[in-house]
Image (cartoon, rainbow, N blue to C red; front, side, top):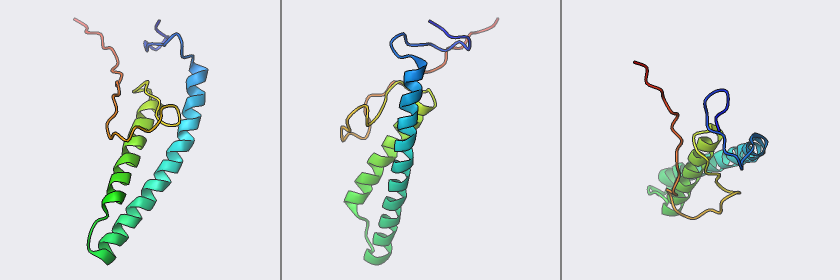
Length: 108
């Protein structure tokens, strides 16, 4: 089924349900963003005082950055994949995500 703007509407996922999910993920996004800033500051401090990079902080930063990326894809309607808290964190840096591409009509 298509809505008036030409986008696909999934029958089992009404818009109000997606809006609630978007509010929850919007809050999670702000928490993850703050965590990422703390990780960046920690990595800078390790670099300045320890003259080395902290590998666990680097891995955590990558996971938080990937999470933020997937949240943003969902919030901008570019993916139907709902990350944590709807899907458990898998530890993978690149879960299988289908990015929705808008259908374009060719005019001749």
